[in-house]
Length: 148
Length: 148
Length: 148
Image (cartoon, rainbow over all chains, first blue to last red; front, side):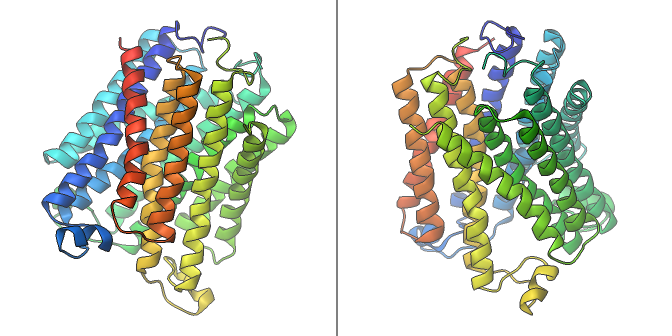
C-alpha cells in the first residue's frame, strides 16, 4: 500500500496516464461544440450570436455534440472515482491496465460514432456499454472490498 | 498522515466504501433513463428512435429522470472532491463516517422522491439540502485548514 | 513522492485549498439558479411550481445560470483529475500554485461575466479559455510523464 501512491508503481502510472487521455478527450468536446456552433451559426447566448449577426438558436448538430459531452460527464466522472477505489483493492496490474485501456478506447469510440461520424446502432450502444460495465465491476469490487 | 492512504485506515475505508455506493447509484440513473425512454418511446437521436419505428421526441417522464441525473452530477461530483480535501483535515472517524453515510442515504432518497415516486415538496428539498450543507461544511473546513 | 501525500507538502496544501474554493464556487451555482427560479417564477417541476401557484416554464435568466453551471461541470471536473495527475509529475511548487490560483480566479470571473453581470465578449471567452489551456497543459504534461 505504501507502494500505491508512488510514481514507480505501474498501477498508478497506468491509472494516471489513461486518466489524462480521458481528460484530453473530454476537453476536445468543447472544440467540437464550438466548431458546430460556428458552422451552423447556432449560439446559445445573445452576446455570442451578435458577433455573427444572428440570434440564439438550437441546432440538432450542436445538440448531438452536447449530448455526447453530457454522456461523457455522466460516465467518465463516475469512472474516475470508481477506478480510484478499485486501485485500493490491490488488483492485478495486468487486469487493471487492460480495463483502463479498454475503457479509454471505448469512450473515444463513443464520441466518434455519436458526434463525429454517426453510425447506426448498436455501434454507440456497445461503445457506451463496455465502459459502463467496467465501471460497475470496479464499483462493486470496491464496495465489497471495503464493506463495513 | 502516512496512515491516511492506507487501506487499514478506517477513515479511508469508509470514504472509499460510500464513494463506490454513490458511483453505483449514479450509474443506475442510466438504466432509469433508458427504461423511461423505452416505456414512453421518447428517444433523443434518430438512430435510436428508428429502432422503435418512431421519431425523436421529448417526454416529461424522461426529462424528470435526466434532471435528477444532472442534479447528481452537480452535487455528487463536487462532494467527491470536497470530501477528499476533508479527509486531509484529520477529522474524527466517527463524525466523518456519519457524514459520508448521511450524504449517501440522502442522495439515494433524493433520486427516489425525484425520479421514481414523485413526492410533494419539501421531501426533495430536504433530500437535496442535507447533502448540500454537508458538502459546504467539508469545503469550508478544508479551505480554512489549508488557507495560505 | 512519500512527501506528496503529506499535509506538510506545500504543493498538496495549495492543491487542496484551491479545490475547496472551486467546490464552494460550484455549490454557489445552485443558490444562483434557485434565486433566478424564484425571481422569474420559472420552475422545472410541477411540484415546485405549485408552491408559487404557477406552472413549469423555461426562463432565459434561469437557463443562462444553468449553462454557466454545466460549463463548470464540463471544465472544473476535468481539471480536478488533470491537476491530480499533474501533481504526480513533480512540478515546481511556485508554478503549480500559480496555475491553481489563475485557474480558480478565472473560473470565478467566468461565472460573474456569464451569469451575474453579463459582459460582452471576449470577456467570457478569456475567462473560459485561460483555465481551459491550463487544464490541457496539465493533461499533456501528465500523459507525457507517464507514457507507457
